[in-house]
View 1 (cartoon, rainbow over the protein chains, first blue to last red):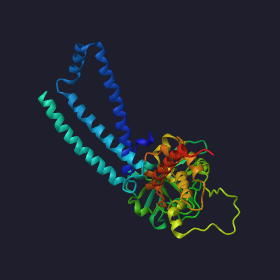
View 2: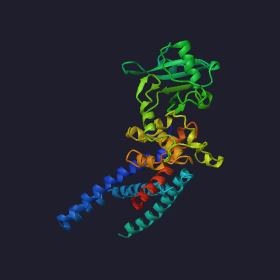
View 3: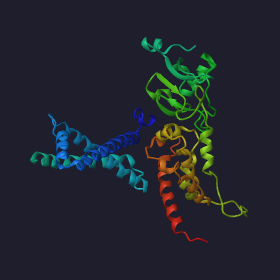
View 4: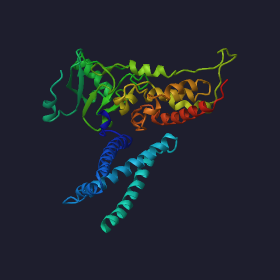
Length: 124
Length: 255
């Protein structure tokens, strides 16, 4: 687990650690999502009951998880895009600046996304 | 002699002393921390501190060093959590009187602060770090090179093979077969050399699973490099070279 350490490390290591962790979260979510969706095979009524029981808890805790998931996806996507560009030789000399720029744009996009998502949920 | 860490740190430190906390490894591989006090007015660098300990306190301390001026690459070690050269690390620049010194990570420890560098050199040899020519090697005069051509690869030729980059690389910690930043920077050094014609041979070696594909551009190797070789940047350049090489192989006419 030596890769997990960020103490005494640069921003590159921090970006890498969070990229790995967010990747694991996304993979976990993918399997969870597929598992939930597979309940469609049990019929629409059963599926709706299962989804309702998950998404409408006593404190709407699931909404918090959704926000955290969105944060993870936006972070992972933006950092992944930066790395893809790096591998094509783009932005190599200003790598740290690119990281902050891409993540900054991702966080702004996330806020806009959450705003419209909240509108959708509120209407629903 | 070495004293217990707790007894030194729990009470007030004696003025005018540095505290060296060193991870020792005995012949059987058993590890433990030993603590030494070194007078501030006798030493300025970490290596001088270790030499002071070796000469005046504990002659059993094993340390590898040679030039004492950051050229030979021998004295790499973990100093307060980061891989550094002991000879060029000035203690006052660390802004602490307590130094935690450990052998380089990702290397097998031979004894105390001495690690086995052979796997590092093996990886370096693997990438053909020498001028390769496709001719018969018989020349009427030397292979000339302009200053501009030299500047193309000069930075990457500064590597002193200290191994700090491998110690800093988190990928090396999870995959010891990864060729590593030093060897890959060495590849770029020769690939950019105008006298060299061996680029294709080296790219075939490093385009594999344990080559440039393993790098995630974390940049810790460049942070650790004492000679500013910037191996993480070199690896990204090699990726582009490697990609072009693979594409050209597809379109190359067969003889």
